[in-house]
Structures are given as structure tokens and as C-alpha cells.
Image 1 (cartoon, rainbow, N blue to C red):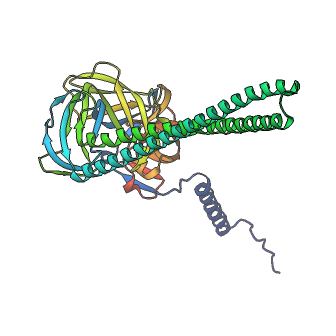
Image 2: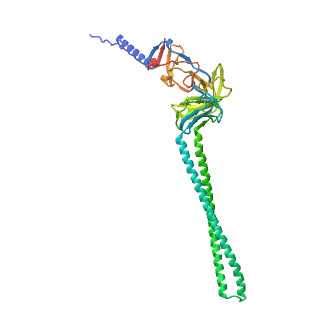
Image 3: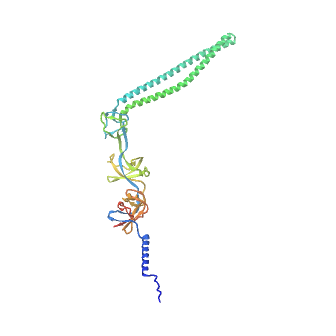
Length: 416
């Protein structure tokens, strides 16, 4: 008789299969949840720079090259062109206001001035003739008015005598009416002459005022024309040191050509060229400093030139104390320009990392010092030494601040 044999549920083969499956699942779960799958690269510690994030007083400032200039400069331009006749003052000389520097000659300009002068004198004579005609016309009307008034007065007296005689019937009515009509006619003639004289007088006064104004303007034009020749003599507008181009007798000078400048050497200022990015941050009153002969000198912005040229704008800074005595025009100085008051902030040293990351992320070294991980950050203001950290880093953390060109797109650095 056959005996029924029961099958075993957990055979060795099945146990091995289940254990293997569980092991594979555990490995998969570990890889998904615990294992770091980010790409990594080995980095030599000797080839990178590790800096520590710190919290301290932060000062936003710029290091800008400036050029020393006189506190005031007056430029010499040729108002009229011509040929150099004589040079009175050489470049580098000290001049007083009003000193003659050089004289020019211009025959064409001189002939033009003579013609304009002659024409203005003709116009002035015409104005005077017009004034004389008006005055003579007024005298003629005055004479006519005087004659009309005299005739009227004579006839008036005759009319009054004959009226008395007519009332006494001593003269005929015809003779009296004749005298009366003559008197009324002469009276009307006088009134018309007077009205004409009155209107002509008003018009004459207006015309004379206009002639006077015209004559005044002509004399002003005449004076201006005569001063044109004065422009052929170049004089010093202020007292100072003269700097000119090379000037020689017989040299041709064009109208508007710059001949040189005069510098007042009582003081100096420094002119800076600043990147246009900082234009909203720069204002008058901001201070700066530089070290010269082991002494620190402070300056303050007094003027801003907002015109952008080649991505830069200019400002003038004046000394807050006595400037160094041996400064020279055109000398370069390195100015530390402060853009605001200092404040407490988390700071990150500047480095080559910024060229790759743009300040959006950085590699942070872990506590073991063996690995560095990519982390997003946000930076704010900056100066030549530090960035202000607004988020993503804490004081005491260490970061890699050297260049990232050799790291590729890896997110983990293994430090060796």
C-alpha cells in the first residue's frame, strides 16, 4: 500500500530565494533612501583654498584709481583764428590775471571789421538824418500853428469891434458878415492845424524813441565789432600756472582751438572714474581716503558727473584736510571710497568661485573635513575683500573660495 508523503513548505531552496529577494529589496531601499548618489570627484587639498565664514563689521567700499587735478582750471581757447604774431608767456610760467600770453594777426578779420564799422557809421548817420527831418517837420508844423493862431487872433479882434459897430448900426450888415465868416474860417483853420500838430507830435515822439533805440543798438554793435580785434590778443583770465601747446611765431591757429590752460595751485582735487554699476550708490558727501608718504588723507565727494562714457562716470573729491605738499597735476592715487556706514554682517571672503557660481551657490566643507557639498546661497553687498552673506551660510562654516573650473558639474568633492 502506497504511503502519502507531505510536501515541505519551506524548502532550503525556497528559503534561499526568499532571503535573496529580501536582500535585493533592502539594498534597493538603502540606495534610494540612504546612499548618496550625487556625482563626486577627488580634489587635492593643496590645490584649493578653504575659508571660514565669519560675522563682523562690514564696510562696503571700492578701490578706485584717481587723478590729481588743480582745484580750479581755466582753459584758453582761440576765440578768433589767426597767425601767431608774438608769444609773450611760455608754458610753465606763472601769470597774473590780465597778462598778455600771445597776439595773433588776421588781415581778413581786420578788413571785415573795417567794413562792418563803416556800415554801422552809415546807419548811425541815417538815423541822425531821420531825427533831423522829424525835428524840422515838427518846427514847420509849429510855425504853421503859430501863423494860424496869429491870424485867428487878428480876425477875432476885428470881429469883436465890428460886432459892436454893427449893433449900433454904424456899419453895413454885409461888411459885418464878411468879417464874421473870415473869423470863423480862420478859427476852424487853427483848430485843424492844432489837431494835425498834436497827432504829428505823438507820432514824432514814438519815432524819435525808436530812432534813439536804434542808435543805441548800433553803438553797441559798433563796440562789439571793434572788440572783435581784441580777441586776437589772448590774455590770462585768472592768476596761476600757464600750460600751453607748442606755440611759434607764424603758426596758424584755428578759431576755437584750445591753446592751453591756467591752473590755480592753491589746492588740489582728485577725479575718479567709477563703474556705472555704482552710480545709484554714489552721492555727494561720501568719503574716501588714500595713503601717501605713510600718512592717510581723507577726501569727500563734492561733484558728480552723471554722463556715462565707456561704462564709467566721473566724480570730483576734495581734501578734508591739508593735501600733501608734493602732489603734482596728473599724479595717480588709489582711493578707498566708502559707499555707506559699517554694520554687522555674515561675511564670506572673495575668491575665484564667484566667476563660476555668480554667488548663487558654493561648496561647503563638512565637519569631518573630508568632503565638500554644493549648497545654494544668496550674497548681498560686497567690497574688495568680502561678500555680505544674506542666506545659506552660518558663521564658523568652512567653504571653498578658490576657482571651480576643475570641478566640472560634480556636486560632491572628496578632499584628499
